[in-house]
Image 1 (cartoon, rainbow, N blue to C red):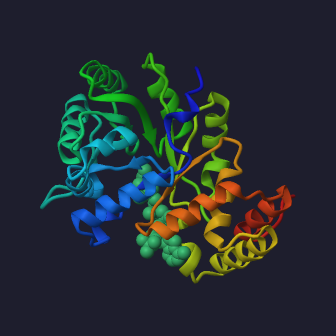
Image 2 (cartoon, rainbow, N blue to C red):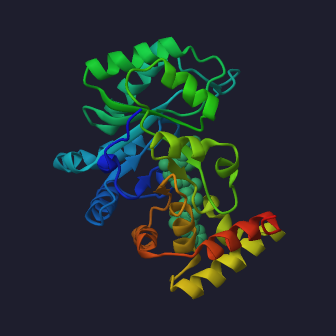
Length: 290
Ligand SMILES: NC(=O)c1ccc[n+]([C@@H]2O[C@H](COP(=O)([O-])OP(=O)(O)OC[C@H]3O[C@@H](n4cnc5c(N)ncnc54)[C@H](OP(=O)(O)O)[C@@H]3O)[C@@H](O)[C@H]2O)c1
């Protein structure tokens, strides 16, 4: 297993899950894309279920030359419920290929830099998936492949059938949800020298508005550490906390406000001590280490 070029993703990635709620005109969307690219956030994270690919593509079509500066990530495998049909997963060969073709059309790009299987599908036939990946690569439609929300066993299973390394596991990591630090996912990434991508680094906003006793403890401690290390707000501390993990996660930014993208980038300059990192850990857990 080899390490990927560290340049595969920009230091932070812009997420587009919430774009449909940003109520931007195509020109405003284009301006936002250009602004984050100018700040060095050149990787963009999409998924068909976010229903934002066409909005992004419409903006990109206003200035197609911008594509060359982007690393475009999208996903596949979640089939939303419709009528009597329940939402389900499909990572069969036909669905993977059809989904990528739809994403390319909606995003108005020729190729995805990275395709992720969005969630582990209990019915996944990994040989079929490997075949779909090979076809997409040969057709020039996808450059790299990865997964999202996969367990260690699921990652190993799929990897065992591929002759190219999976480039990431995109997982939730934030000071409230530390599951990936405990279930071996991050240890596996570190072992394989594969950089995970971290989604919901701000716990989807709960870091600011969470009302539980745990959320309050975490908010208080993040503010305390912010004051100690000269961070302007707790967002910066949360991103720095995620990036201190030795698996070297790449945070995905969820906000559509350029000032908040800048805030996230400020975290790259912050350092915290082990004691400060564990103080945030202890605030979440409600106890210190043994
Ligand atoms: N693979 C997966 O299964 C998966 C799952 C979820 C997400 N993702 C990816 O990860 C990206 C990020 O996830 P996320 O959106 O949950 O990230 P997040 O950063 O944890 O949450 C973003 C939310 O927090 C709010 N927020 C940010 N700063 C704030 C502040 N200072 N005060 C109050 N609210 C604030 C944002 O509001 P504003 O918009 O108003 O700033 C937005 O609603 C997504 O766009 C998507 O690309 C992947």
